[in-house]
Image (cartoon, rainbow over the protein chains, first blue to last red):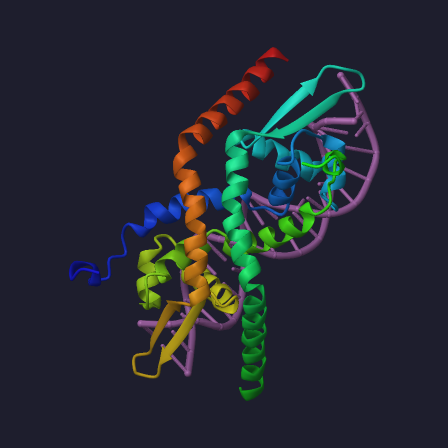
Length: 133
Length: 133
DNA sequence: CAGCATCCGTAGGGATACTG
DNA sequence: CAGTATCCCTACGGATGCTG
């Protein structure tokens, strides 16, 4: 911490934040994580994914797959047979992303109790405030 | 990889995916990352945040701060002076989260070119398909 | 089987005027 | 200064019928 840096340097956070936001947006959305992880196991078919990600609709499965494919995280392979067979596999950068995401999973596991308590405390404080007013 | 695990075990992905989704949801939303990182520098005031996160409205700044505070990632300190002074600081788990997020930033930095190319390739393929049809 | 097309509801977010 | 309250709008996502 230099004398200069104490002058409230807001800058430089931006590039970092921007890059990070893009990654997060990539895996945000209600189903992206589920689909990505399910497909990260190796080749998996459309209908298998549908069962592997409970509650997802065909529409959302397709949309999510297209997005992941577009970003190069998943590869789509069509086998020109009848009936059609389509398989989704993780790409190398898709696998790497999953690995990077484990840092978040670890964090979540370490602090899930703390977060739960923080929420309870916050909500409790909110409702007592209403009583006071 | 045991013989058993080759039997397309879809299960167990779920817990992992679920935990992960919750973390991602926590930092998803258009402004969460920006605010979190800006505040992770140490105590910072409301108006300073407003400038540190360009483009954010008061409404969204407040909403984002409340969410981060509720999850215990940020702490809010009110100094009962006039004019009022409110400072936001990262909590320990907030700091840890930022550290965990660097894994994603690294990934993004390593592959930003590849992603860009994947997108271009995908979009190009899409538009040529339209021509063919 | 693996999608695409359509309709529709909700929640996230933008702009901004007002206030303790 | 540090918010709240209000209005509005669009993008995400759910449900479902159709098709190569």
